Image (cartoon, rainbow, N blue to C red; front, side, top):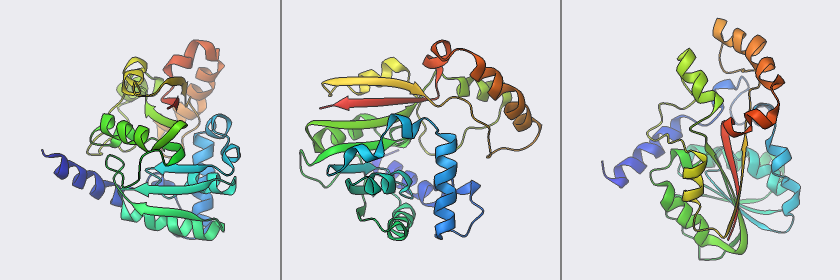
Length: 255
């Protein structure tokens, strides 16, 4: 399949599968809808506000690649950053525009491919791409573009899925599919592979994160067993032992 055809398939998929939309019970595009997405995201990703201090980037130019409905982007903007968000999906950008409008913030939002960005070199202080590289056609090409548009000394904040994680093991044992497992591209990385992908950067810090929290996405006896037994048992184990098996590999990379 040609790259152009694959990109078209990825675009079509994400136009129809906005992340976390399946849990929403509020009318799409309303303040209650965005509040629900926000609460769900930071309950599921309870580590994120701790690792990424959204108010730390006041006055800095922040680009989010694959901004989706703009949940994280609004937090960067509220913290005083000058924000730009891009996404392949028009559906996502339309939702992000509404989210930014309702929040009273400002953002430059564009439909754009993160593998081929229409920005000059050395433009942004920070490039943020949380959960995007694993779904793109050519991760190395996106990394090259992120590196190109970052200012010297700038920071890339990135997340990919860990190939050797507790959630991958649960997937194999329970046969419960991963969220967006049916996407045209879903690539997982080992810690070594992710470090190799980030080789253009001068300095890289990796933090495995995303440990079990109670699911709101799944139902049935498997979900009850997961929520009532597995979550508490797993999190009782010293984190130093389980750290390498976090589902998310967070990277903080300096140009």
